[in-house]
Every structure is written in structure tokens, then in C-alpha cells.
Image (cartoon, rainbow, N blue to C red):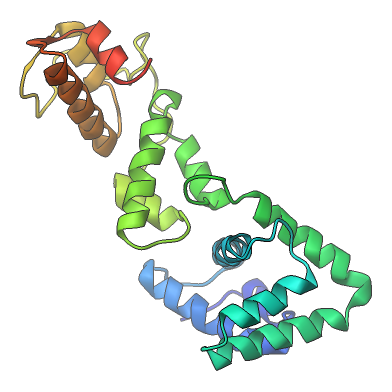
Length: 244
């Protein structure tokens, strides 16, 4: 797998004991995601994912910030994995030799710790940027759908790959109509309806630009309608079902 010179140089600047792991991980992620070249941007993306996974583990150990004590707890947790214990020892020793830079390193890591939510899964900055491309009125549902897909796949962090897999690609912001949907014009009927919808409610559904979210909205609204004994989904029922 070819690398850009900038990406290769960044790896060369990393501590010697982590370089083999970086090279191996980057090759693996590049193959998984259909990359033809490893550039600096992709290196940053994978670094952010990896750091969030580590931060999630540290938070799981009961630490709100990274301290040298966290390394001892991590070693105890990993005692059955000698190679990981050895890596932890190397990292701790490396930081111990950089006393003047420790605060800077720990401060950088603190940013990742602060990205770990109290509930739900952590998201990389790149994945959040993809979510922001979806219209505001579907982002909550999109987030729920994406996190459910991440859990189904056994992922600990929401990455751009998970977003793409869950939603089939998030389109850029469309031109929105006054109803909050994409202005596609009239005439295209919504698919998958199993009960009667009013024209206004169906139009609102049809204007949701992301198919996976549109299906989720349809299922949620129709389930609400059945629970309420409704025979027609009107705009009021639509908005109540979505908590608007």
C-alpha cells in the first residue's frame, strides 16, 4: 500500500516502539475502507479513532483524566495479555523520560477523554462532520440509527465508515422546502406505507433525503398511529410520534 511522503514522515516521527503498530493498523484500515493510498488526512482519522478507543478504556477504568496511575490500572486489567502489558510499560517509560512534555501530552489526551459521552458511543470528529451534513430535523434519528448499527457491528467508536454503512452515504445539505424537507417537487409518492397517510404527512416523510432515516421515521410514525388506534396518519400524529 503506497504512502504519501507526509504520512510516512509522521510515522517516522513517532516513538520507535509504536511505529510497527501504526504501520500495521494503517495498512489494515486502508484495505478495509478501500483506500488506494495512505495520506496524512487518513492517518489523522485513524489516530483519532484509536485515541477515542483508548480514552473510552481509561474512562471505563474510572479515571476522569489520564494520570500515571492509570497505567498501573491498565496493566492490572491486561495482565493476561503480556504483549499489551509490555506496550503499556514502554509508553509509561517513554513519558517518564519526557517530563517537560508530559503536561502537553496529557492535555492533548484530555481532549479525547472529554469527547467520551456519559451515555451512548463516542464519535470521531470526522463522523460528527458527516452527521452535520444531514438536515437538522433528522440528525437525532440519524444518530440513533448510526449508534444502533455501530453496536450491532461490535464497534466501540462511531467512525465515518460506520456512518456510511448505516446510512448508505449522507448527502450534502439539500435545498429545503418550507416543510423542512428537500425541495424535490411534487408527485413522487412515499414508499412502504402500510396505512393511510394525509397528503401533508406523506409529503413531510417523502422530503426526508436519507433513505435509512426515512424508513425509520415511517416505522416509528406508523407504530405510534397503531398504538393510538389511528386509521390515518396526519401531520399532528407525525409530529407527536417524532416528539416535535
